[in-house]
Amino acid sequence: MTKPKSDSVNIITMGCSKNLVDSEQLMNMLADCGCTVTHENDNFKGDLLVINTCGFIGDAKEESIEMILNAVQQKKEGNIKRIAVMGCLSQRYAQELRKEIPEVDLWYGKYDWKKLITDINASNPGRRPYGRIITTPRHHAYIKISEGCNRFCSFCAIPLITGRHHSREIEDILNEVKELCAKGVKEFNIIAQDLSSYGRDIYGKSKLAELIDRMADIDGVSWIRLHYAYPADFPLDVLDVMAKRENVCKYLDIALQHISDTVLTNMRRHISSEQTLKLLSEIRKRVPGIHLRTTLMTGFPGEGDKEFSELLDFVNQIKFDRMGAFAYCEEEDTYAAKNFEDSVPADIKQQRLDRLMALQESISEELNAAKVGTEQLVIIDRVDRDYYIGRTQYDSPEVDPEVLIKKDKDISLKIGDMVKVLITDSAPFELYGTLK
Image (tube, rainbow, N blue to C red; front, side):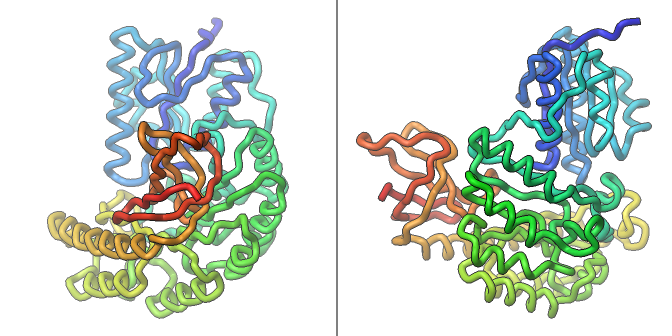
């Protein structure tokens, strides 16, 4: 029996930028097969809807389930012919989901989604090895250099979903960057579950510094930004590359989670409070002016008032340039779920989270105010009615502060332009400036 061909396909991406890269690769493969492909989170029409799910924490799982159920309703109403689900949620809960939501036509996990091409009776599985249809503004893209994680932090389900850490080869990554440069991409956000382990599995040692150094040599690469480093076994030599290469942003996203030794031990983070402080000092010493982004957690088992006070003092001492935080949510089958009681009440977790973020807001306000009067290079992301809106090298897309530049009737800027801006005013999470 001939499988029905899907001429129009829409992809909805849930969760992180690593999922977005998979969606962009799938879009390219579908386009190579002659399909009309879109990437719109509110588009529930067409021959096939693909939902790329997230399964990281409870809220993300609920959002993915709601999206699938919404799609099922749209299918019943005749707006969608078929539904496919892929990604982390379906990787982890494949059997349960198939049983509970039989209206979904095609199921895939985190790594087998390329089978979708032949399953929809497409004539060509896609020829280009790293071809992608970029869904971000065309001047910036995410580059995924590895998958999986070997750390097995006690709270984290990601290794249960993605498996062991496995790196891409350097030449493969560099070829992808060159191809994207040829399409006009100039800003590259390097992502992985664990940047610090890059290369150890295939080269026997860390190769992050070499990769970034060689990437910086590619013609057309204006900015390289590093995301999701792990503090234990951090490859310090990448800091030397960051310090000497102008197109490697003075920016590092390094998730620390906590500072209390009690909590760090319970989290199985393989690093102590003293080692964490030493590492942060070394990073700032080697790369003057670096902006650090981190993620912290409140309410993990073992966090009492004393441990939370340590966390507040730590944030006040280090003054992170950017910070995100979330309250602990127990994930089934993790070490923490099996070995610790989720003993901190939900309201206490939230109160601590609110206090932590309030402290960070005051720190951000102070740090942003210090930028007033400085000149910053800004890349333009979008145009508003009254402002050009962009970011400095210290700001990652979607999660970090933006720079609002008042329009000048005598100057016209395009998305992707890089311009010098005099910072004239600030808010906790925004900067304002004028063109130089």
